[in-house]
Structure formats: structure tokens, C-alpha cells
Amino acid sequence: MASAEFEQAVETVKGLTADPGNDVKLKLYGLLKQATEGDVSGSRPGFTNPVGRAKYDAWATLSGTAPEAAEQQYVTIVRDLTAG
Image 1 (spheres, helix red, strand yellow):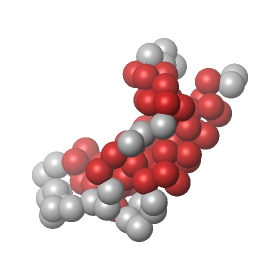
Image 2 (cartoon, rainbow, N blue to C red):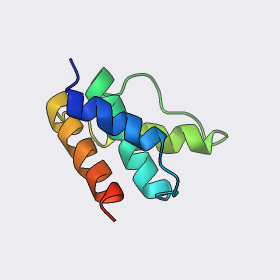
Image 3 (cartoon, helix red, strand yellow):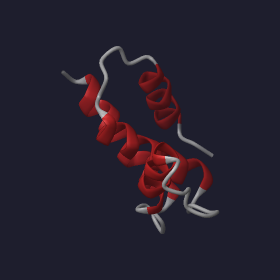
Image 4 (cartoon, one colour):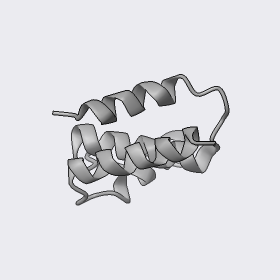
């Protein structure tokens, strides 16, 4: 079960007005997937799907990370984004 702090951070990201950049968005995507679904599964998308491939890779780099740790990293990144 996701923590209230994590759920609030997810909602905060949905409401961001400034684009944090692709690197940050991919990191957040990977952390969100790791926190909610665990290790990546399925095959890596092919070269004709560069967005799907980047998302898969961002998630795959977090394999083995505990969901709670992924939640905490996600919350920390969102705090940094909104503390400006």
C-alpha cells in the first residue's frame, strides 16, 4: 500500500506547470512503476518505439529496488522540484 506522502507527490507531479525535463520525467516514471508494480517485466520495446524504450530502460535500471525505497526517492525528487 502506497503511503499518503507518496500519493500526494504523485498528485503534485500531475499538477506541475513547469516541465522538469525528460531525464527527471523518466526517473519519476521508473520510480512510480517500481513503487506500484515492482520489477519491470515483458520485453524491451524495439527501436521503432523510442519513447517506450526509454520508459522501459528507466524502469529496468531500478530492478531490485524495494517499493518503499522507490516511493521515498520519488517523494524526494518531487520535494526538490517544488521547493524552488
